[in-house]
Length: 67
Image (cartoon, rainbow, N blue to C red; front, side, top):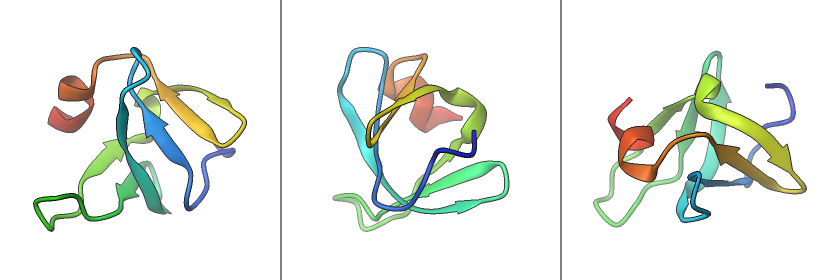
């Protein structure tokens, strides 16, 4: 999904924030460091749509973080 860009918010299917895009690396999205001081990665294929400046995943946040 080419519309995904840095500083974009990523939310799960319920609208809960998963993270903020730090950078897009090929087929993955690198999120900014979370409260655990770690970068997390999200497969771009999990983002179902981009609405404005938000990428919406088609699954819950726990599944997003697991992949």
